[in-house]
Amino acid sequence: MEYDVIVVGAGGAGLSAALTLGRCRRRVLLADGGAPRNAPSPAVHGFLTRDGLRPARLLALGHEQLAPYPTVDIRELKITKLHRLGRGFRAEGTTGQGHAWAGTAHRVLLATGVEDVLPALPGFRELWGTGVLHCPYCHGYEVRDQPLAIYGRGKAAVGLALLLTNWSKDLVVVTDGPGHLTAYGRQRLRQHGIGLRQEKVARLVGGPGGLLRCVEFEDGSYLERAALFLHAPQEQRSSLAADLGATITSKGAVWVDKNAQTSIAGLYAAGDTTPGQQQALIAAAEGSKAAICLNEALTKEQCA
Image 1 (cartoon, rainbow, N blue to C red):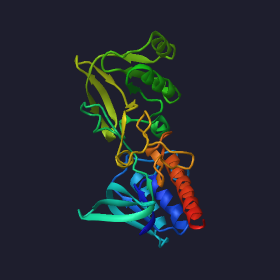
Image 2: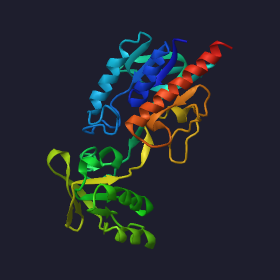
Image 3: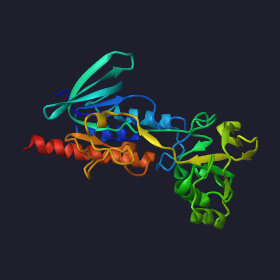
């Protein structure tokens, strides 16, 4: 095999895994397939010693810190296929220059992350990461004490609205049509002074600096807000795990055991690809953990 491990995805999880494996003197290919999920965001928050750093700068630092490790090979490469090859894998993909590529490894670590599926309304994609936000822990402090909207329906919208009460007291749930709220859910919103608008949304209107200016409804009325939060549905950015037959959870995440291994022997996953909380710091930690598990599995095989 050309490599001990091919790491697919070069966000926080992939970079962290490559660093740990490089320090284990493992032959590693880090396949960087493009911009990460948080690329539109102005800053990474809650990352100890790196709070407020731009996502691109955080990744650049990761690349710089991998440079001293001669066994780590970083390539601009999108892996599109994985095949079982004995006890290892054959990977195929396309380089940044558009050339076909293929390589082999004893193990593969997927750190490809997820894509957020945003409502097909004007303004959501344009303001994503600045005026349209997904995580209060990542962005709530930056819009504290400002008027905020929560987009969604049912129990999920109520839960997100209640979570945001620690960052702002001026909150309105926008359901974009019938909200499918239970009587208890409505009671909880009223109890905490959270407003409710059930009109159909026409679009989001942006303001200075990429912030939200207002939510405009189809009836011509509008709601001035500084930002809008939502729990958007997600999809895996890569189908590699599913294509090999790996177990996918009911929420669309790639299932892993306590050692970060999927249901396919030798195929590992870490970061937002897997179930659990989604934050840059957590993804980096999971990448490091997966790398340790990978190294120990390879060592056990070598020393059998």
